[in-house]
Image 1 (tube, rainbow, N blue to C red):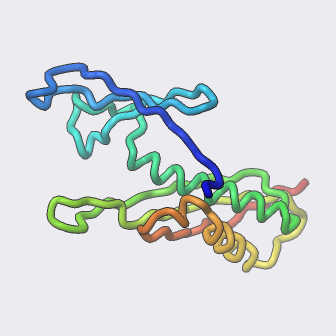
Image 2 (tube, rainbow, N blue to C red; image 1 turned 90 degrees about the vertical axis):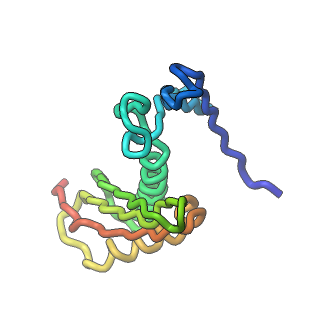
Length: 161
């Protein structure tokens, strides 16, 4: 039995000389809420001008999906634990490596979340590590991929109410 089904529409039309491998890899991602996102192959994979540097590439989207899922779970768990999070920012990074002849994969994703709390006192230093571990354990995206995902949380910041 299927729990939930998620959809995305990906649309591309030829712009250039397809047979000569001189065509644009630019395309559109459409989501159920009506959002359209310009997408493309990464310029590190398909050189300019046949890729679009300003568009989101699948590798960036993969890293962002892991980071976003982790953040959403972290925020929920921090709230349940009684913390008031004022902001959360992550500078996530994915590493692509050759895993076999002719085969590449993102083999590691590192999350570097920076959390700002609203509080009058500094909480026990283990809270951050514990909540990030719990968020990682239940993150749907992290549970769906086979590469290593590392969380290198930045020290939290505090704001007095």
